[in-house]
Image (cartoon, rainbow, N blue to C red; front, top):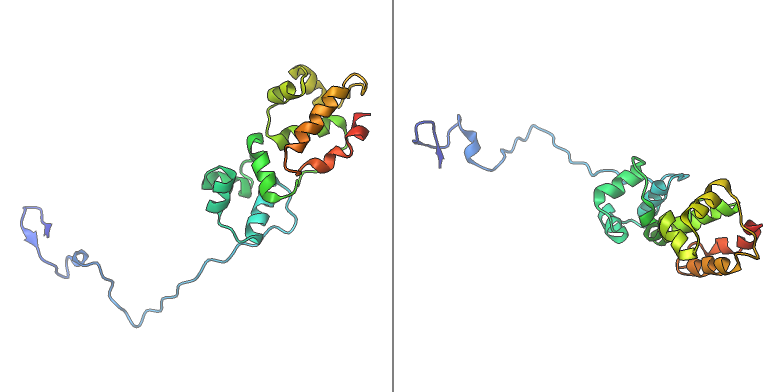
Amino acid sequence: MQRGTRGQARAASPAWPQRHRRVAFLPWVKISIRRPKRPTPPSHPKTLGEHILAARINRKLRQKDVASELGVCDSTLLHWEKGTTSPPVVYYPAILKFLGYDPRPTPKKFGEFLVHLREALGLSRRRFAVEIGIAEETLAKWEKANVSPAVSKFAAKLERLRRLGSDTDGVVSCHYLTLSELWK
């Protein structure tokens, strides 16, 4: 029972309608419940988040399911899909695996290729430099200035790049065909 200001119990009355948990039926009031519209996928996705949104809608998956598959929380995925934030490089391998393709443009120069591969592997510049056996500053120079080393001096590093590319489940493997062309 609900108690008043002086401690006495109050009974249900018109003055205190909160005592019951039922809603009165009003036959003259028209109530309609609408189901929310299903979102439509973007026709020409541009950002990585829009590609995730399009794939999610086409596969009829919930944000919650996709977020758990990518290893993030629902709100993070929502921000990626809306374009508020972009995914960190660490999540690129999971995103590319979920999409089944790489939506980023094909690299045309050696430096672009290195950035493309590094992001597809989800590695920082420092970690990627260690993996291919060069200094971080050298890698930064190659990525930014599109300066490519001589092929003869770095044949072993070229093989390391190819081996790294085979670890990405074939998502970025299409770009290795042009690696020798990029190296020139």
